[in-house]
Structure formats: structure tokens, C-alpha cells
Length: 89
Image (tube, rainbow, N blue to C red):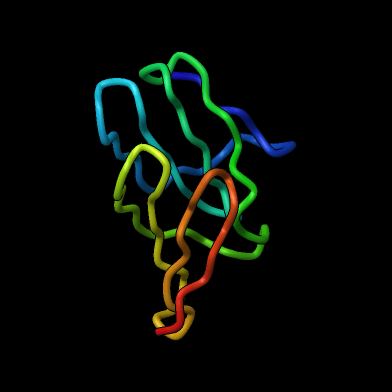
């Protein structure tokens, strides 16, 4: 698999597929990407700042996933349609 970059090669922490075709990947520097064709191509998701490290990933549906921030106080971020929605801890 080839992942899009943000001006540098991504450092990935988790990848998770909800189906054979739809999956998400997150990593360091706020990296998040989504595929809808089994990983043949990936689309960057603008959900975090480059200061954040996304440490985990749970996929809820083909359009929603969540990832905890680098600090427990940061709560969690929902990745929905390429947008970020913060949840209070």
C-alpha cells in the first residue's frame, strides 16, 4: 500500500478496516487517511494539527472512526467524512 504524504513520509500507528474495501489509518503529526477501495488509493483526512500523535483507531462505520489524542485529557476525536469532531473526556 502507498499512503499519501503531508510533505514527508507518514509514521503510522494504526490501520483498521471496517469492510474489505473501507479502512482508515492514523499516525504521528495528525496523520489520518481513508480508503474505499481496499487500500489501492488513500485520501488524506484533515482532522488534526501536525503537533498531534493519533495513538489508536476504532472504526465505527464506513464513514466514522475515532482516535484518542496523545494525552488522556485530550479526549477523543471522531473522524467523520474527513472532518474532526472533538469529544469531551
